[in-house]
Amino acid sequence: MRKKVTIVGSGNVGATAAHWIASKELADVVLIDIIEGVPQGKGLDLLEAMPIEKRDSYVSGTNDYKDTADSDIVVITAGIPRKPGMSRDDLLNTNYGIMKAVVGEVVKHSPDSILIIVSNPLDAMAQAAYKLCGFPRERVIGMAGVLDSARFRAFIALELKVSVENVTAFVLGGHGDTMVPLPRYSTVAGIPITELIEKTKLDALVQRTRDGGAEIVKYLKTGSAYYAPSAAVALSNSLSEVVPTATIRPPLARAEFKRAAVEAETKPHSACIVWPAVSSALTGRKVPAPTCSVSRCSSTPRALKAVSSVGVKCRPAVGAATAPSFAANMVW
Ligand SMILES: NC(=O)c1ccc[n+]([C@@H]2O[C@H](COP(=O)([O-])OP(=O)(O)OC[C@H]3O[C@@H](n4cnc5c(N)ncnc54)[C@H](O)[C@@H]3O)[C@@H](O)[C@H]2O)c1
Image (cartoon, rainbow, N blue to C red):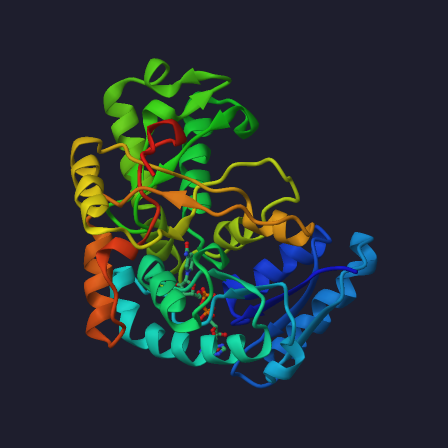
């Protein structure tokens, strides 16, 4: 039986994610939104595209969570996007209220699902969703690392005039201005980009990656990016792909937390490697527990503080974070 993916929020990111998922025939898709008619209309439109695409995905739209029942994956894109001049953190209060309402319904109707959080501010929303749903941490994932890494890859490929296929890049840290692109671990056909691009140019690419979302908001004026973010939700069905993503780390004992804090301070390029949750879930494979070290990224404590301010109690030790360090460096 084909897997079922519910996408909450049928706006730009949600509807385009539905498009990618259906056109890759990864799953059947249910779009849900608070606006009446929009998910139904977009769902039907996508369904009618399937014969042209030669795909049998069933796409539908609804305003009733009953139709989302027993989803394997629930992607949460509900919320407001930022406008020029706004930071992702400016969306916190509005989107936290939406997240609270949405997660309650999702838990009720799809208690065994995996959540993929997209709404911003991403790290805070992933943490909030984790706290609200009570699911194990392996089933709450934030989408950001794949997107930020894809942006970095696109800029590297443009700079060196090579195929994106040959470019591997890792961007970790929080999904905000303090994200951590890792040039040393980014390669073109195995050659580190630090050997291919001179430092000032490389610094400019790193900065452009950090500002990737804002660059698009500035052009669009009325909303934020959605083609690349939604593509990052609908990863291809490859079982062995390794992707960076925001995950919830397990609670740490006091001594461990202290050690993690020292590690994070002394190894700024810290890290998180996560297996592809979407593809694994869609193909019925067990999703391996994501692991990561504590985030050095300043946006995460800030985000946590912000979430606490709207009523979710959380400790930095369980912060949602794409923390820097590769598997080999991990002490956990
Ligand atoms: N994590 C990332 O990398 C990333 C990238 C792009 C956008 N985003 C975020 O994703 C979110 C959506 O962006 P967008 O461009 O699709 O916005 P959008 O305005 O086009 O769509 C949001 C949709 O959510 C719906 N919605 C609002 N409250 C709801 C509720 N309670 N239940 C169901 N649906 C509800 C709205 O009606 C709207 O259709 C924003 O918060 C944006 O900042 C995150």
